[in-house]
Amino acid sequence: MVEELLTAAAATAAAAAVYLTAAARVVKQYERGVVFRLGRLHGDVRPPGFNLIVPGVDRLRKVNLQIVTMPVPAQEGITRDNVTVRVDAVVYFKVVDASAAVVNVEDYRFAVSQMAQTSLRSIIGKSDLDDLLSNREKLNQGLELMIDSPAIGWGVQIDRVEIKDVSLPDTMKRSMARQAEADRERRARVINADAELQASRKLAEAAQEMAETPSALQLRLLQTIVAVAAEKNSTLVLPFPVELLRFLERAQQPAPDPAAGARPAAGGPRPGP
Image 1 (tube, one colour):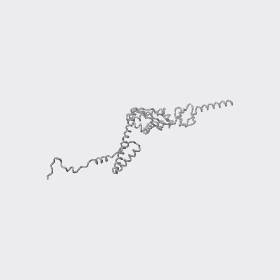
Image 2: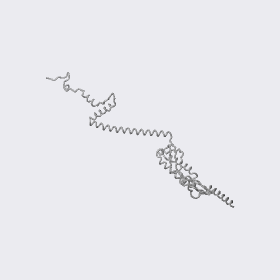
Image 3: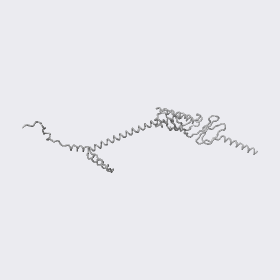
């Protein structure tokens, strides 16, 4: 009798162990469990930890709630200003409703990927090339709204969308390089012209000061001589004022004789007695 009881107890324990093994499910901290009982959604989402289900009746599906980083393949399109570009992006999203992610959509990852690709092509067609190159923050926000609108019904939340790279044709790159070079050259010429204008104004002010004080010109001449002599040159060229040359030229000319003007010409009539 005792042996039969021990055998029954051992059989019961073995059956319980088998049942627990078949019914036990462990859900990780970053996961949630969705239970289907005979094909229908049963109860609330199972929290992390140890959970039991009815073997053969219930089926537990685990859903990852971690943020997913999904690269969007490069999409080729024509911008609003008729430039062919290839743009790729990356999408960051996570599941916020495990039940909706399992029930409402067949594969939420594939759905988000396809929606991101179509939205990226739509953004390319609505934007100019300058916006794609320099105004990406606004495009990222618009792309995020376009993807997030249908994803809400799938239990998915879009955290961030970033445009990674914009590939341009080689001809367009060369044209942009020439445009940038021409713009830099234009700015250099404007700066040079402005410098010449400022220098001419300063020279005019200096000339006016020297005209009011003639000795300033001589002092400037002496400063120039000192600066040139400091270089230990064998030949020294000194500027000579043109006004001094004109003064010397006038000094060398003979003065007019007043008596010569009053002398009568030869052969002319002589005065009478």
